[in-house]
Image 1 (cartoon, helix red, strand yellow):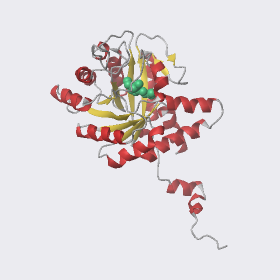
Image 2 (tube, rainbow, N blue to C red):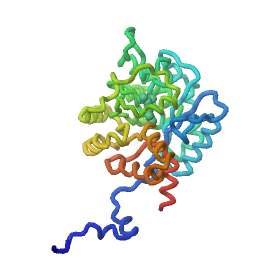
Image 3 (tube, rainbow, N blue to C red):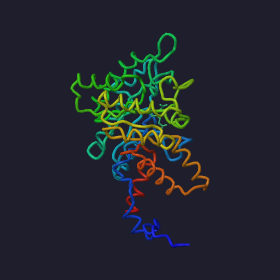
Image 4 (tube, rainbow, N blue to C red):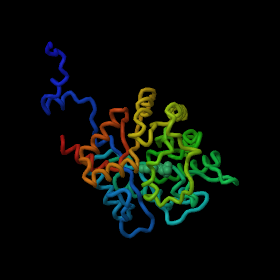
Length: 327
Ligand code: PBG
C-alpha cells in the first residue's frame, strides 16, 4: 500500500486552519427576525408550537425590537394579528390596522438600525383565512386580490416600511404592487418577492402564531412540493416584474431549488426558514436529542451554502448572539 499524497485532512488539523479555509459564514446582518404583534394584548402570549416565540403586546414588541437591533440582525419581518377580520381583509389597508401600526412602531424604535419589513398578504386579515379575496364560487380571485394588495402596499409604504414582503402567491403581484407604489410616490420602496413559496406542511405552527382562520389549504396558489422548475420560473417572472429580492420558502426542504435560483438570479436571493423548521429543531433539541446551538447554526450555514444571501429565521437574535460569541 502506498501512502496517500493527497490528504484533505491537512486542512482540518486545527481550529485556526478550519477557520481559515471555511467557505461559508453566517453574519448577523444576514439574518431577519419574523415578529408577531397582536392587537389588544396586555401581556405577550406564548405560541405553544414555537417554544420561545410569542405574539407580542406593544410593550414586549418594543423591547424585542431593541434586542434585535442590539444583536445586530439585518432586519425584522412584521406580521399583525388583528382583533377583527372580514371577507376583504380591510384591516390590512386601514392605517390604524395592527400591521400598519407595527410598522410605525418599529420604524420609530429601530428604523435607523435595521430594515423594517412587512408581510404583504391578506391571510391574517381575512375571516376565511385565504391570502386573497374570494369570488362567488369561493375561489381565490387572483385579479381582485391584486387590487387589495395594491392598497395594502400603499398603506405599508405610508406607514414607513422600506421593504415589503409579497407572500400571497398571486400571479402578477410584484408588477401590480410596483405600479401602485410608483404611482403614489413610493418608487424607493423595495420589494421582496416570495417567489418560490411552496404549499408545505411546515407552515403549521405559523397558523397558531397568527390565529389563522383557514379551512382547507393553499394548493391553488402555492407551489407543489414536487416542482423545482416551477420555482425557477416564478423567480424569473418576479425578476422581470421588478422584484428587488427573490425568496425561496421553506428553506431546508428546498435547498436544491434555492441553489438553482441562486445560480440563475441577478438579484439577491433569500430563504425563509419557516415555523415548522423552527419547531422541528426546537422539538428535537428540547428532548435532548440534538445539540440545539450546533444544529441551529448548522442549519443556517447550510441555507447560506446553498446560495441564500440572507435568511429569515425565528432564531435570528439568538443565532446572531452566538455568532458574535464565537467570533
Ligand atoms: C402569509 C405567510 C405565511 C408565512 C409567511 N407569510 C403563511 C402561509 O402562507 O400559509 C409562513 C411563515 C412560517 O411558517 O414561518 N401571510
